[in-house]
Image (cartoon, rainbow, N blue to C red):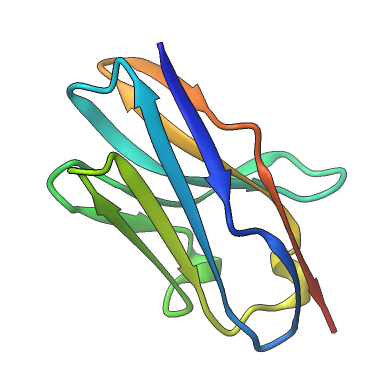
Length: 115
């Protein structure tokens, strides 16, 4: 089992920045992909960004150039630096990790961007 705990959400104004963190614990030896998804009210959960153990990244088009994902394998932690935030970035952000073929999810952290 893998436990994921997110932190760093909050309320900001448009144009400001936030940094999300997600720490993994439990049976984490050999974690593969880690990343972030988000779900806005009334919408499906969508990919934001992922990063492999080797550091290869993938971003949703809507956040390219504004968000940066990074990972500290020694700490089993993944980060999401979010700059130039927009009201449409408002959502619950969920941490994701994959161990072999099994996905794990955090409980989510709310990010609210006011205009």
